[in-house]
Image 1 (cartoon, rainbow, N blue to C red):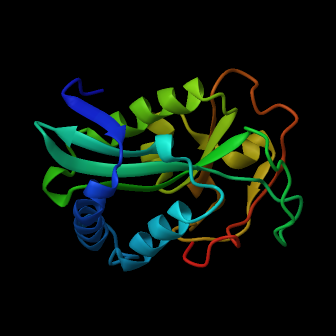
Image 2: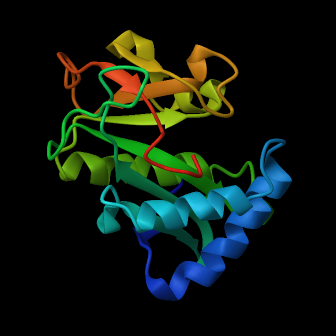
Length: 190
């Protein structure tokens, strides 16, 4: 983990820079998004009941914003249809999206951001974190396939296979007794 990266909650003043960062990060770093859908998702999360302002972060290096990521409250569904459970409980947060400035790819910024963010999630008392993405990356920072926790994927991109849907407990056995499906139908842009 890098010690020269600072994370702090995003502010309204950061939004324009965050948009630019996300566009470059996704258009240059993925083959599935030009970033416009990701910006729409961030705005949708910010406007939803699931938004947690103190868990929406920017990462700075020498005073420059080099990353953006957020965790939002995420209820599990009892079925693949999107029948949500756990209203009002601090069980799960979803890590999405994660964006590193394209000029800073492959420099350990993404993993540093996420590891520091996980500490904040723990401080707020959540039991676990879900994420969908490259399991090669996320497994290195403590995430495991979600089905190991009785939490199952239903759909999504880049969900090429079930290992792309992952969870991490905030303390040992924190997710014991919690089960269900990851359904994104509360978001149009997910």
